[in-house]
Amino acid sequence: MKKISMLKCINCGREHEEEEVKYVCNSCGGNLEVIYDYNLIKKRFNHDELKENRFYDIWRYSDLLPIEDLKDIPPLKIGYTPLYKNKKLADELDISELYIKDDTRNPSASFKDRASAVIVKRVVETLDEDKRIIATASTGNAASSLACISASVGVKNIIFVPETAPLPKITQLLVFGATVIMVKGTYDDAFDLCVKACEHFRWYNRNTGYNPYTREGKKTAAFEICEQLEWEVPDKVFVPVGDGNIISGIWKGFLEFKKIGFIDKLPKLVAVQAENSNAVYKAFQEKLNNIEPVSGETVCDSISVKIPRDGLGALISLRESEGFAVNVSDKEVISAMKEFASNTGIFAEPSAAAAYAGLKKAISEKKVDKGDSVLILITGSGLKDIETAKKSVPKAYKIQPEMKELEKIMVSINKQG
Image (cartoon, rainbow, N blue to C red; front, side):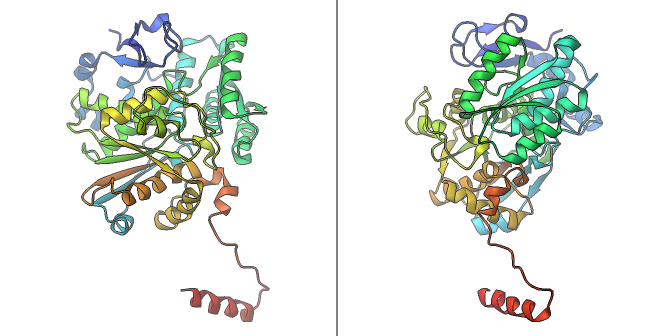
């Protein structure tokens, strides 16, 4: 029996057979959601099966992924990233519990590896070898994750990035062997060019908020959170939001585990956006269903977007979960990078540190209660954007190799406390 029952448009509600559509709704062009036969899945996927499962990665949830089997899966360890409890920060923030889901530990140091792995696996399953060319547009992380996972199985890819993408991310792409097209424009310009190029050259399109199967990889983080917290969920989950595909994926994961009886409670989701790249925040605050474009200018390159391509999915997730959205400034994000790293030992890139900045903002706005358990999703490594990280820290001391000079510095440090 087929485990995928349909692909349903989140905008107009039209239902499609899996074979009749490739990326978006045939009626309105809206984003599609993969709907499974959950009654079938419940019969063969349960807690006992998970206990016996030897895969400690995203493939342990293969019954709820859009793949046929576990043959030819990418060999890299993707997912089942660490989940930490941080009592020190919880006490300082005056909340009950603080959990950190650290997706910097994925192969390309990004959450996006989850989606790329599912896309690459599907391409290997469904396309002849001579047609396996995957393209994507990205500000960096989705691109480097696709290049990384593709390299592990020998699949070619074409990457479109805005010319402002951080150099470490561009370097990752080139090292992994991707063909990199730097677009003189924004991420949105790169996205639109990628769509046209895929149609013209018949490449497979991985674009976030366009390819419905990216959400399927991202939802696995929610599965892991449930399992790692022994089938409990936090009261609130803070997610950095750009295109909106991560938060819609996280919500889908929680919903699916509730549908098959793995959990009995759902968390409230919190979308954290950067000022000037806050189209979802604005639409949520104004109770709109349409997403209006914004400038997209922010140091948080991974969530820098004028028009979120899965913005409606993000809004649905916030409303269904009874959550909310938070707006943070670049200044707050830069400050959060150092504060978070020095209290947790996790070096988060600006977009990921935004989740922590958003938590602090929400607490200051009294949107988080003292008794709340909170999880923040850290989606990318700070090593991907050293230039912004440097803005959050003082300069290192430079001295001659002499004790007198060191003693002077130590006196100065002790005075500073």
